Image (cartoon, rainbow, N blue to C red):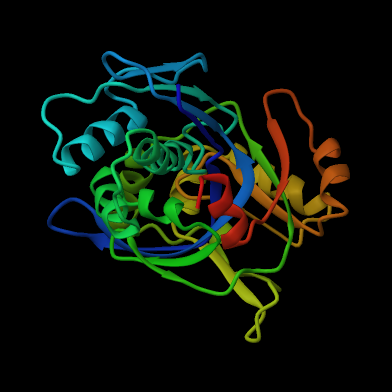
Length: 296
């Protein structure tokens, strides 16, 4: 029995600028995506019979609504195979929190595409996989490459850029999650109501090892989400007090990331422990490191 193990990595949004809602309901964005070392594990095995997905993580479905299952169905069809997917079993072990803005579901879907392409011996090219990934969600194509990349359009038009310096990253997720659709709806509501951007949405600068340092960090979703969930501001302030160079909400939240030197991040993570806060310490990953984890 052939088995492939892949470890898809999470992402943070170093920047996220959001345009007005488009006619199709999406928003044009301009975002700088960055892979981090926090990862799930997919064990994909060839097995006769209907396709199956198992996952024991609370709140994570193991049926057709899971992006891994959808990835299997889309890849099976794209490869010209008839009917529903079969002859594979995927075990999903979760470490990336969901409803956190870390892209865990999208990362799992991308990793499933690469692993199933191998297990099913489909021979799909990287371009083929990117086309399938784009149908699954705006973030999914990024996870096929990883590292540091500029995303435009819906976020799925990707332009890889130089890897940032190796930095320590502390992730803090409060006890609540935020649905992506809610975050964008709140942004639209606040803009329609003429509410000024919250002070927390100021530009923050960090050196990332580029010639044009420093990089200005900004997330347009941070203000509307933190207006509904003020605890996000408490997390950001706590990260700064513990020595973060910068701290900001990632994606649509609710997770906040703080950037530290790699040597100081573990101690800061220990000091950030609070009841109801999930605190994780990791680091930025290069494109090569992120690619290796999903079999590239």
